[in-house]
Length: 87
Image (tube, rainbow, N blue to C red; front, side):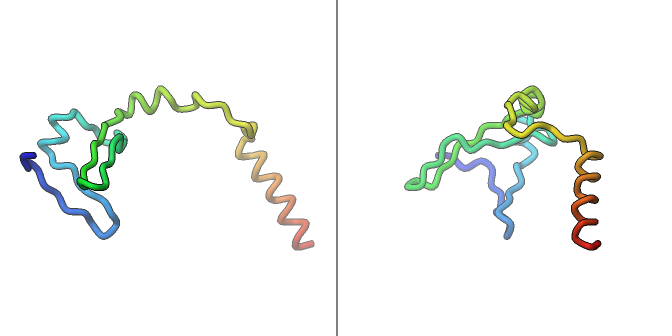
């Protein structure tokens, strides 16, 4: 394995992808990084870049068991419950 690019892990466990790698992979701000293969024994990981356009296409595609409640309605409900506690 030839080492071409190196970066340092921060105290928060974050790394910066070098600019030349970002250009080569056509990575944009907001893209996601998926760890698709992690080999503990050899301490290797394979990442896959998920572009924001793919993420945007998937947004809202899953069904939710809890129906959507508008924020204004939620605030009214919370205000009523809070008022019950303090009256």
